[in-house]
Image 1 (cartoon, rainbow, N blue to C red):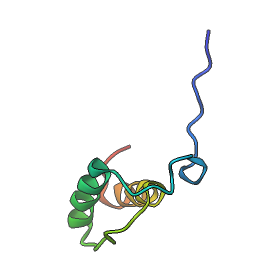
Image 2 (cartoon, rainbow, N blue to C red; image 1 turned 45 degrees about the vertical axis):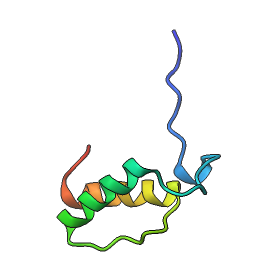
Image 3 (tube, one colour; image 1 turned 90 degrees about the horizontal axis):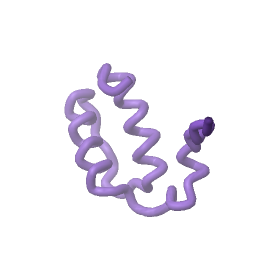
Image 4 (tube, rainbow, N blue to C red; image 1 turned 120 degrees about the horizontal axis):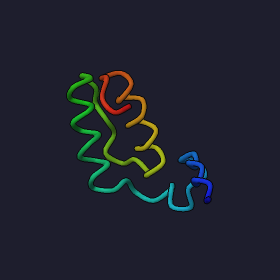
Amino acid sequence: MTEPNPEKAPEEWTTGDEPMTGPQQSYLHTLAQEAGEQIPDELTKAEASKLIDELQQRTGRGA
């Protein structure tokens, strides 16, 4: 039986400093609208992931 891979923190991602992906940007804009927030245009993948987690908690989306 294989153990599931533990989820890495965004700051540990090897590609975390690359620009956020299109899907991340799209989802962030949706969450930001619901939360009444503005998001910066120039986020890294890691920054976008953290912001998605934060906005999901505030909007009740996600887990």
